[in-house]
Amino acid sequence: GQSLEQPSEVTAVEGAIVQINCTYQTSGFYGLSWYQQHDGGAPTFLSYNALDGLEETGRFSSFLSRSDSYGYLLLQELQMKDSASYFCALPGSTLTFGKGTMLLVSP
Amino acid sequence: DTAVSQTPKYLVTQMGNDKSIKCEQNLGHDTMYWYKQDSKKFLKIMFSYNNKELIINETVPNRFSPKSPDKAHLNLHINSLELGDSAVYFCASSQETGRGNYGYTFGSGTRLTVV
Image (tube, rainbow over all chains, first blue to last red):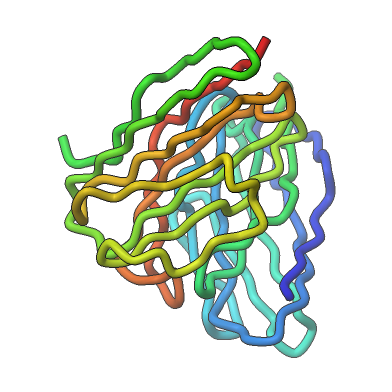
């Protein structure tokens, strides 16, 4: 089976940098994805890592270490609109999600 | 607009009723899915369809049945609704079965409330 662990909640202030960690267990690894979901909205795809290292997309970056079964999402220059839930997920025959991390950004 | 669209957005119904949620995607994707998001925001796969064939059916009650008239549509039928069925149901699609860098595109969700 597959499982993912991530913190339930993270708080930060505008302009700061925050890191959301994710550890996973899986028998077959096809990469690690990240999704963002605002309250009342749909999950939206943010990033995908198949190889070790850092992938940067604007203010968001995602990191993967396959040997540690670990990844993180890094959000820089936080804005109020970044307040949302962030899910790490394992692609496979379907997408298996972690339980999500609620990010609260305060002024 | 290219997207995954699902209707209705809200559905309030009584226990024991039968209801359907419709989903359509115009992205040309190969696979469509239904996910259930509970009150704790946990997203759980329910069904997956590839080329009109059910490829994964997780341990959901058989009161739930997916129906795909064609590659672009995957509807969800629910019989004999129960209070525990209250949740947000998301339809999604992807280019392949999810392996690799093919992000899922989700519909806006259907909030089902059973009273």
